[in-house]
Amino acid sequence: MNKRHFLLALAAAIALPALAAEPRPFPPKAKRGLLTPAYAAPDVYIDGKLRQLSPAARIFNDDNLTVVPNALEGKNIVVNYTEDLNGDIDRVWILTAEEARLRAPVIR
Image (cartoon, rainbow, N blue to C red; front, top):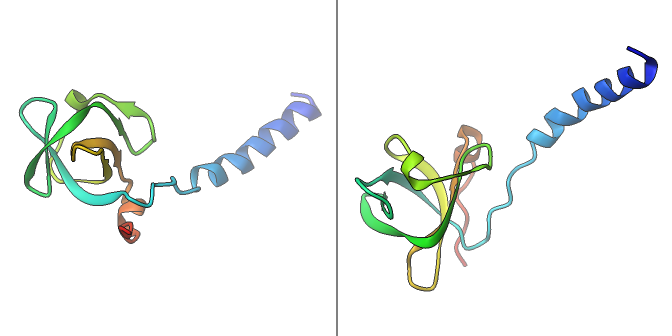
């Protein structure tokens, strides 16, 4: 390994943890809740209430990658979510343990 490759590897090793620690930006109108997948999409339970995902809903896992609704597993998954004009859930962010410990967004 030459000096240039070593310096690039060292810079990447230093920069990657700093990039991963940056919090995800959630919209100001995002709400916090506990999500449980229902029997079939587009139904989901948010805080025990049956809700529907919008036709264009996007779900982001804790690595900020999109997942399909049928891939959701578990009960009471801590999420931030937004609603569209019809009241359907249009965006969902599955929170990491660290994000879940932070204060919930304040709805204005």
